[in-house]
Length: 167
Image (cartoon, rainbow, N blue to C red):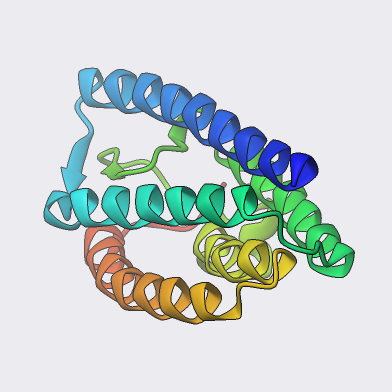
């Protein structure tokens, strides 16, 4: 139980740190004339991720048997997450923010996948519950996340339509 709780607490700390970075980047980009798109779905994403973290913490407190294969997968996904954030740099946010006349970033993981962060998040939301043997949570949150991501990706693609690929 202690290791499971520690894992979830570390994920929560990581997400809070990322939110701080995202907020700082968002504020800086908006101050430079950037525009936010698709803000209507953002509270739904926050609610889903918050509920997922609460469900993970509750599950961890039950003392589940740990599946180290899925923990390893989850850790690998964290490396991918860092790669995306590093590649986007000051443009990484948790919102859809576009900078007029800024080219799309196509380096790093974006060379291989159009929306690498969303792929990583979709896999994380499945992998962590499976690491705790909570396959039902993996299914429920995985499906809910895919539905919200479909909404978000459409909004992001509309926001980026016509932008040039360069970086």
